[in-house]
Length: 230
Image 1 (tube, rainbow, N blue to C red):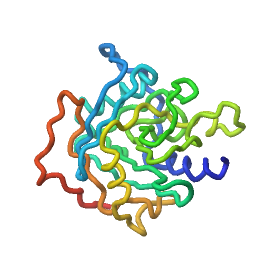
Image 2 (cartoon, rainbow, N blue to C red):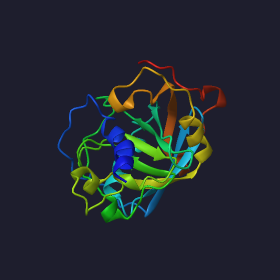
Image 3 (spheres, rainbow, N blue to C red):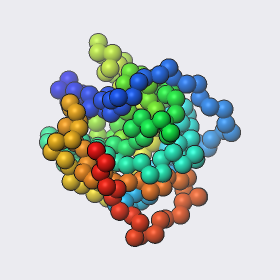
Image 4 (cartoon, helix red, strand yellow):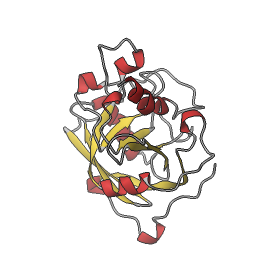
């Protein structure tokens, strides 16, 4: 378990490299949310529909929906594919986010551990990336396999293991698209530290992110991976 936690979790903590941590923001005031909210991520590889668990992870879901509703996710990319060579395949995750873009990123949010939400890191789960607990902003992952090492383990002596990562929803349609992004070409040289060799080249663009009632697919000819700018 210890080896698997290091392999699975440490790269997530590095996603926001270069972005200075800030104090967690309080949850924005807004109208009450339903228990679940569906969002369509229209990508250059196809559409992924995710169901967000607002009942059990309200702070994280409200934050994600703010990025969606303010169109801050339009034009960002899936830039990372972590591929683990052990266990049942496919094993790993894909990652997207604003990458600290000051025009897009919002203040960090309070941490909602799995020990409180009950949302576990299973195949298809959405999970927030972070530095320390309470520093998550926009970076999120979609898992291709079960990763219990990312759950909170309150009994652990390791502070990172005790906190875990904040899971807040799961894919309800488009896991084939998730896998296609995961299998996309990687750069052998881009990325630093644990991220080296995990960077998609080219990254896969999120054309639009919309709540499902408002989702309109982009014309097929525009659904192409974005050119890498790294």
